[in-house]
Length: 261
Image 1: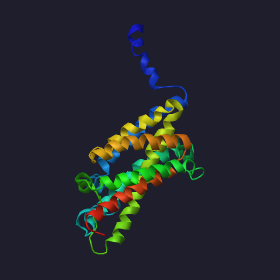
Image 2: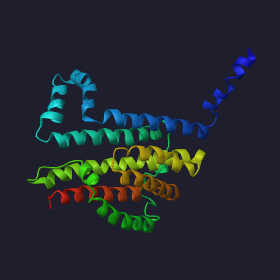
Image 3: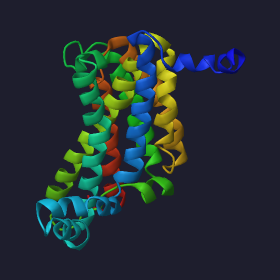
């Protein structure tokens, strides 16, 4: 009998004694759950999961949500707002609640802070100067023009709706940076050290599957560099700013190729 139970003794490694040893377990599990939520709950079709719940509060809530997502004249914009809102929920709200309410720690310890955020700015500036010409060159490719923009507004008075979309798009990138370069890198670094960066890069690359190949491959390099800078300077702010600049430029370059400007 003793031999039988001793064969399962390795299971004790799943229940480490110290908080530092338990942290990677929870970071990986929470990250996996959030990424699964983003995959299955952010598409607009997922609203069907919630209609019965919404109808408890108002009998026409499910019907109104259906109209808003599929029958409104701006339904394509609404579907992207739905996607962005859920993405922000999984990238930011859940990890932030775990950090604040469960672990009783500060978001600043996970890079979400303004103080000291300008450290290393010359490195970010050089990176941006390198990336922007690359984005311009890539924007002429058919794969790029097929993928972007995510939202193609009506050509008449398009700027107002484009600004609304970009606000939600920007929020999605800020929360993305917090999730990967903040929650994952700083949540794992005490146990994994610098390898927390590479543990983060794998899922970060995977969320780019389906994008043009150059963008997917570039995400590996960008993930390592931005993860290293967050690890070194303990802030995600400039990384988020750079990510936003690149993303917005990609949107507007794609509109330019389509004759909006």
